[in-house]
Amino acid sequence: MGPKDERRFLHDLSTPMSTVFFLLDMAIEKLNVDPEQHSEEIKMLQGAVRSMQTARDLMQKRREILIAEEESATEP
Image (tube, rainbow, N blue to C red; front, side, top):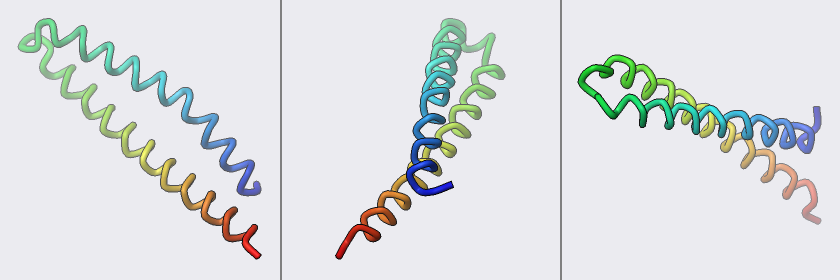
């Protein structure tokens, strides 16, 4: 897989990840109506958000590396 293919793959992953972020946020918001009753569920979902943020950060770092490699390859 070349750098452009890898960048396209990373881009394609970002859409479903955005959906997961949205759904996690919605679930947390609904549970926060009664946070005392749902404290364990809220903690678990917040952990899932942190894991997704880590994955997003790793994807962004990889994307930046690929862009830098492409730019250096096109320099005279």
